[in-house]
Length: 345
Image (tube, rainbow, N blue to C red; front, side):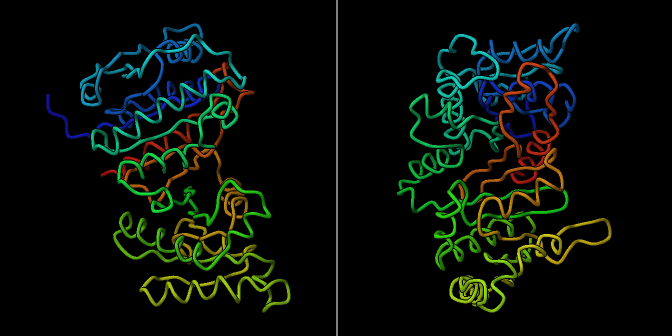
């Protein structure tokens, strides 16, 4: 049976967290959006989540598939699932467990390789837990680093030759981060000319493709008031501004550095007012994530830029405190699926 929709893979995430439950809710609540999607995970864990979400009602059925293409022809009102390897015994809700970390990593590796081979249009990752990954002996701290390593291996390059950046997207704001999971001291040291310029290049390339034009990039300063002419730090003068000038010389539509306490609001898109910038480049993790999450964590989406594949994820974690209750909100996952569809088309 022919189908114009390309398959989209959704990884289970940490089976002890809310990932399986929000996946079930996404398929239940948005059958049109999830048509052509399939889950890479464990059958027993997804069925358990379906039972929790259903409560006293009949759970959504889970249909085993053997390939991404088979998922396109799955019956309506069911969840296609591709199981990778032997599934561990059911993990306990809301606890860090090596078995959950190993399952999450195994599913992610399979989905990444399938996406790199062109078997699926894109990859949506439900949240995993970094401690569980570490307990399982996975040599990467999270999704981004593992996907970067898989992409480098596929391309025959060193990991350093496949630079990636995190972009957070909400209805009102986009922000790209120069660095992600570092201590604040290390993040400040990562604000170098090379890292800022590389971030601008990755941002320009990725958003030019999705917007169909050069994006308007606003750059946040590192220090209060963007350094106030050197009174509160010289990174803006010696590092960030030179990187902006270099980006301008390469033809990018970029400006700054601007005071970080105002640049995000200047970029905020509202009805009838698209904002001054299409995206803000932030100097470190919390500088960029706080405004996005404040404006709407329930529908925030994490997009990995720089990979030779489409990857999105919800902008929240495993929420162990909610796992197994059926109360988790699937809105961010649905937005991640929607964005992956847009980027993969």
